[in-house]
Image 1 (cartoon, rainbow, N blue to C red):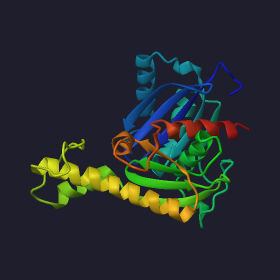
Image 2: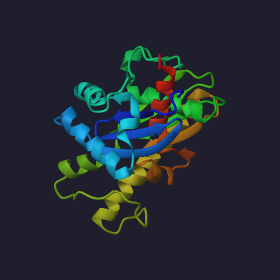
Image 3: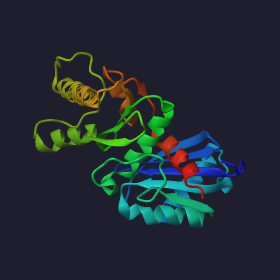
Length: 264
């Protein structure tokens, strides 16, 4: 960013959480995670952001630009309004069809690809310094697997139910099963209901991840880097045989990169 005095607000709106980050140049100086609520107004989000900045020692008056990735359509307008009214942003980029990504999209219908998936793919390919293909596993409301070729083309991927979606389904559909916290159990063979559920969900999900990634590697016919991001990436990454690196802020970094590519 050439305007060194101005800071950039990056916003990733997911189905469960909204992740916000403040960049000063190429440095992520602060980040926050909020619950996604469609009923909140731009005024409410504006108040929350100003409070978060004040508590974190960030001068909100220095935020001059904003980029938004959103998979919840009703929240696009409130977020744009937040940037204009509460921050006075001079430039606001909304990631979508027509955004300059620098990455050819080989999906049958490129409009179907979620903005967050493209953001992750761009950031991942830059992270490996454009030297190898890459697979990104993003553990959000849904778990997505995205593949970028050695030539930097977005090839496609896979979508699976998220871990918490699976836990909620167990709780709601099985009358005698409790709602549990997902942590690593001591043993795979659970000695009580909670431990058995934790084992089944965690290790079962690790098997799903490794199985899909291994099949993608075989189909790709190349040796990709395998990266993970999202709220539960560390938990799964510690157990997975295929995930090589966990990058909690990959999506935020991708937004910063795309902002630089779309400044004009």
